[in-house]
Image (cartoon, rainbow, N blue to C red):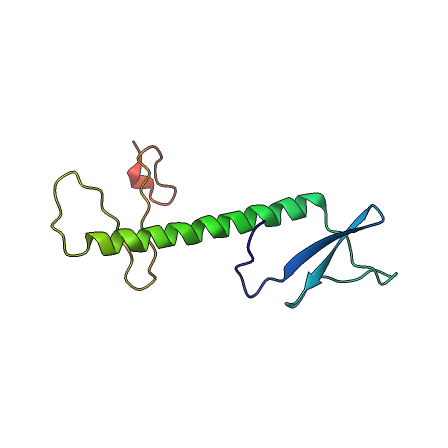
Length: 113
């Protein structure tokens, strides 16, 4: 079960009543509009799977950030040696640079093989 991690998105609760599945919005704003009958609208099945995938991606990103910070603390103050893997972090945004040696740059046309 994915853990909600965003304050701007509402938590979706799914329930089954008399073999009819429906979802309702709990907290948050927007979404969760009701139809003419006053019943919550049923999201598409792909929408639910997409939301689960998004929650898994957020969880993985959070875990990666924790790992990156632990790696930074572990290597702080050590001398850099030839061949060692380094992480470059942008000071103002706090984001890390990712390098893929198997793929050329999509932005810089001069980085062609």
